[in-house]
Image 1 (spheres, helix red, strand yellow):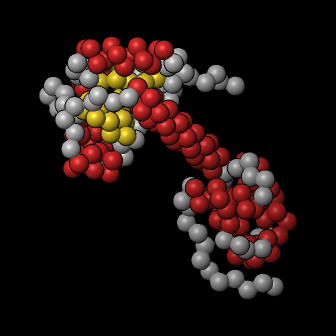
Image 2 (cartoon, rainbow, N blue to C red; image 1 turned 90 degrees about the vertical axis):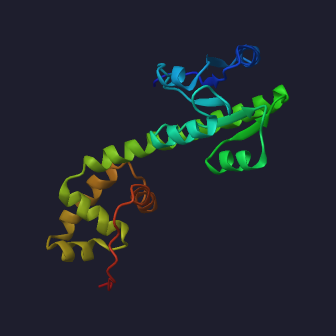
Length: 214
């Protein structure tokens, strides 16, 4: 089993004193961190592959934090963001939160409020990474299926019986059972209900025919 990578809190603020204070706070509670004076420094850095979150100042040299949030999203970088600012207002807060920010803190803020937001952000990133990992495993299993096994899976999750699938595909019921067994094994599904959930997560097309049991 691959050991879990320690979470990292990434801090972007052009005020060195603020960066030092936040890094010191994080170190005091055992959290790893990296700090940057500009958004560009952050973009050119090598980042850890473990859970992370971004503590981001609204006012930065060259680009403001809200625009940087949009830039990251457009580039496919989905990292939970906690905004900090000494000049916050309601429209700014609303825009940040609507775009997915975890929290919007106005300086001076309580250390505990920042730590609470960071823990929430890291938990969110862990869950997101877990879901991505599970989906990648599902895709890997699905890609290992033969074209006929994929056909059988599509019809199985639509609710068809083996005999109906055999009729639909012009094959024997025994052959369908063999293919169905391979599907369950390769997808590591323990039940039909689990296979249906997998199909939904993979967003596979569903057979919508009306079937008559016989």
